[in-house]
Length: 172
Image (tube, rainbow, N blue to C red):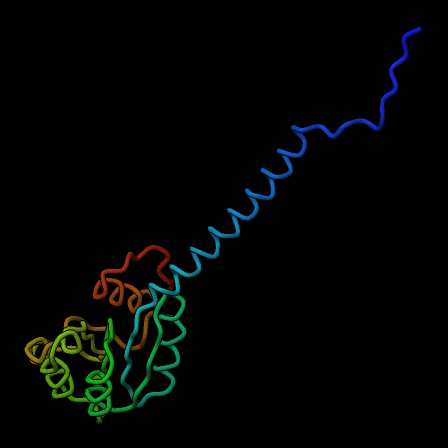
């Protein structure tokens, strides 16, 4: 009689490979998510908003933050020019309806050395006639955001001026 004594069943070598593969896939997915998050944060646009209207500033901050902008808020044109001189911005938005904002603020920003003076500049405006539009463009403005504020229009102007894709623009 030939009898073979065997111990407990040996582990299936293929099973261990499957478990290892699953762990590696899970780690890979996690790393991909971390990479995407870091890329998203790295792409955040530094945006300077200058307005004395706190409601407008908070609304613009809420909208643009959802679209990758890091918002810096100042309340006057002179402060905007001084801030732009100290830090590089990807976009500057001046409230042209605020008494402390003048087209001189845009001219001062444009007069700054590169890269500070090269940021695109937009203006919040409640009424834009030909004379204001011509003077604003001559002062260095690149675009306009009408008031009352339209989330879709704000996102559209910001994307256009910063070269950012407009997918997923906010609705009015």
